[in-house]
Image 1 (spheres, rainbow, N blue to C red):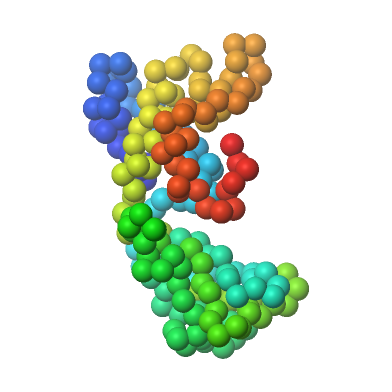
Image 2: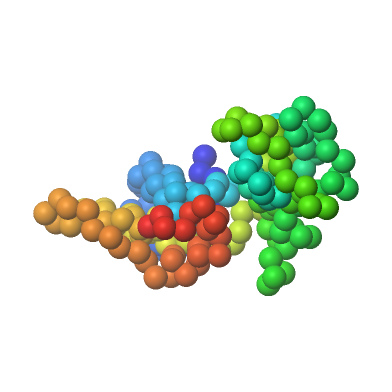
Length: 195
């Protein structure tokens, strides 16, 4: 089942521009649109459920540890020792952007001038959290609809909203300006430079 879209949503969005009996192709377009957004933003917009532990490798001499999107953090273990909640802060603060939009935490900052323990390239930090988002952002769903519609409408000339194929078979750079503008604030810092 698609994470961001349903076949019914795409059909309603495309109205009469697509065949209504081709659910399998519409479903595949949903998956492709979601994969394109995941790649462009370097994150998955999945709704968090349950908790699990993930390992991370801190950069040397830094107080900031980048983590996957998390709606809550249950524990942080550094080099075998559990940190007290007062030893670090989750960011963005208050789980909000400056514009007031709810966002998951994506980094942990050690306080009081401490830096993360490093051991060359070994994972020295374990974070137990509820990974994901509290809800899929409406703008991500809108971007996925636009990309899915382009895939469907341009069935013979696939454009994917992000990558296109010319009629002679070569790959051409193509970005839908609405999609590009819609997702730019959802890109992880690690994603800049990815088309």
